[in-house]
Length: 185
Image 1 (spheres, rainbow, N blue to C red):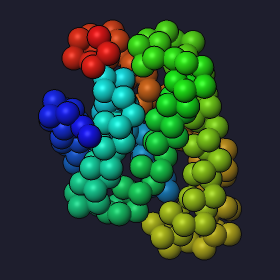
Image 2: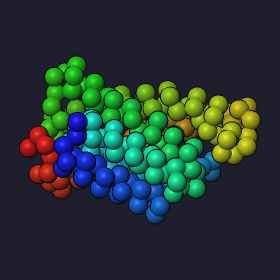
Image 3: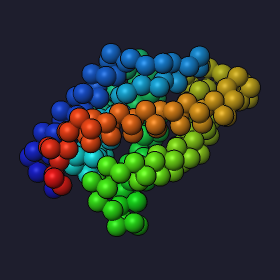
Image 4: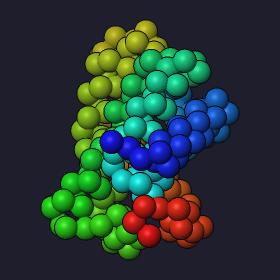
C-alpha cells in the first residue's frame, strides 16, 4: 500500500509527465519517433520513492498520454513499453547486486543500468515498431517500414532516449538535490 506522500508525489510526477507530453519539446524522427523528456518524471519517481511509485507514475502517465497526445493509445503504449526496461533493470540490479536506490548516485551503477536497459529496449522496440507501431502510425506495410526505417535507427533513437531520460532524472535527483525528498534519505 502506498503512503499518502507517495500518492501525492506520484500524482504530481504524473501531472508533470502529462504537461511535458502536451508541450512535447524534443526531436521527432521522420517516421514519428520522439526523443523527449516525457518519462523523466517516471525515473525521478524511482530514484525518490522506489519501483512501486515509479510504476504507478508510469501507468497513470501512460493513461493520461492516451487522452492528451496526438498519438493517443499508440504513443502511450510505446512510451511505456520503451521506458519500463530501465525501471526493471534498476530494480533487478537492486535485488541481484543488493544495491539501494542511493547507490545509483554512483555513475558506474547508472551506466550499467542504462546500457542494459538500452539493449533490452532495442530488443523489444525493434520488432514492436516494425510489426505494430510504424504500420499503424504511418500506414506502411511491415516490409515498407523495414525498407524506410533501418533497425539501427530504431535502436539508436531508443538508446539516445534511454540516456536522455536517465541523465536528466539523475541530474534532478542527485545533483539538483531532489533526493532531500526521498524516502531513503
